[in-house]
Image (cartoon, rainbow, N blue to C red; front, side):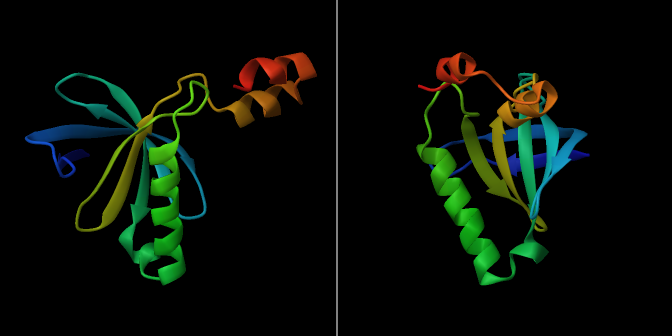
Length: 122
């Protein structure tokens, strides 16, 4: 599926993305791999159906998530790129971590040692 989206306020031009493989699902969003067609840069993209955002509490949670991600700047946290929407969905474009999440690592290894945890904390 090819997504053509407008850039957020303050930017010019268009970016075109190709939606790729399914990465996972949460309570309100599905995550896909998105590739920016011009640069071939790969991102993780949370896709929120607008139907599920009709409730005010769901919309509030999405706005809080966007605000939190915009404010996070840490080498151990996926970077927020930008958000956009079309007629049916709201999209949060995030840095893609091809080795998986911190939680994935903990699950596979059945926990971490204290020294390992200290390495990942800022």
